[in-house]
Length: 205
Image (tube, rainbow, N blue to C red):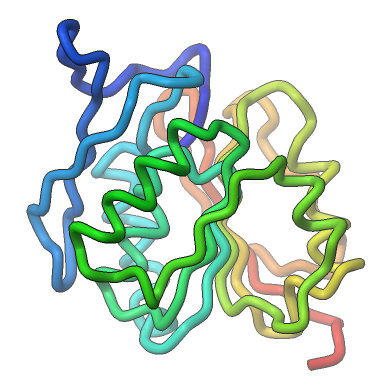
C-alpha cells in the first residue's frame, strides 16, 4: 500500500475519485480492481511487487498472510493470486476496507480473505491464535511505525520462527529497526523507498 507523502499516486479519475490496481501474477494476473481515493493511499508499484513475490515465490503456496496498512490490498491480493491460503487485511480507513470486501466478492475469494477495519497497533495488541507465515508491513513513512509494530508481532504471537516479514520504509532510514535476531534475506532501494524481506529466527515454533 502505503500513504507515502513523497511517492507517486495511482492513476485516478477525477469524476469518480477512484484509483486502480492491477494484479501482476498468478490466477488473477492482469485483473484490474478499483479503490476509492481515500487516506492518500497508493499501491506498491508493480516493479517492486514483482521483485518481492519473486523473493517469496517458494513460500506462498498454502501460506497464511497478514497485510498491515493494506490500503488497496495490492500485496495481499498478489499473495492470494499466487497461491496463499488466506490473507488478513487490516486498514483503519473504512472506505478502503469496504472496497476490499467488494473486490474480494468480485474475485469470489471471500472465504480466503478476512478484512478488518482497525488500527494496526490495536489489532496486533489483541493477539492471535495462529502465527502468520508471511507479514506485509507497509506503513506511512516517517511515523516510526516499523519500530513500534515489529515488537508487537513477536509479543502477541503473530510470527513464529521461520515466518517471513516484508517491510517498506523510507530510504533514508537505511536499515529498518527490527529485532536483532531477524535475519535479512533480501533488500533493495528504489528511489525514496527501501524494501526488505526478513526471516524470523530465534523464536519457538
